[in-house]
Image (cartoon, rainbow, N blue to C red; front, side, top):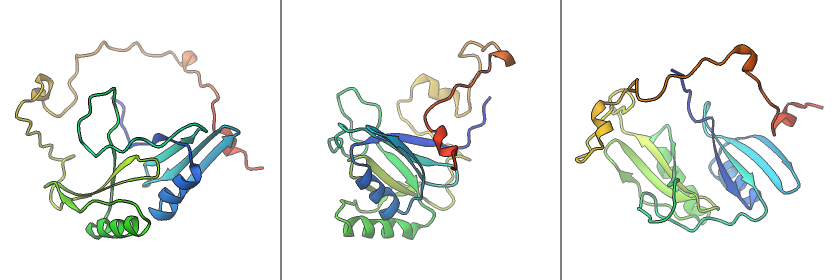
Length: 191
């Protein structure tokens, strides 16, 4: 089984890289760690933590999303609701709230979900963001808690991956393990 290390990056889209970098780097404090581009295309990466990044493609005709409240059901084709970014200290939530409001962005009250405290807001692209602080003594990764009153059947199998539900893959021969060049290799050119 592969061992995952986190979200390498979430890839979002913007029509305004200037405003996006100003928000994520300068207001939230995330380092800008990579950027590539050519006419009609940019792809920039910001560091959330040592293992996680958020990236933005800038395309000329991208418009901000229609605002949609976090976690509110919709009845349209849909796949993405919001990003939740963890914070290290409880006080970080109030610091972020003050920063967001001072910059003219809406910020919710701090919400107690029992296992986390959360602050909700939106970036300049109307991407819904949640900032979460884990309540002390509650670690859902170590001790999963599943309390759905009407769970799907698969949930009753438990938290751990269940073998035997997918076909076994054929091993890929070393000579077939090909790697192809893609966008971004220019970041390595130090000239």
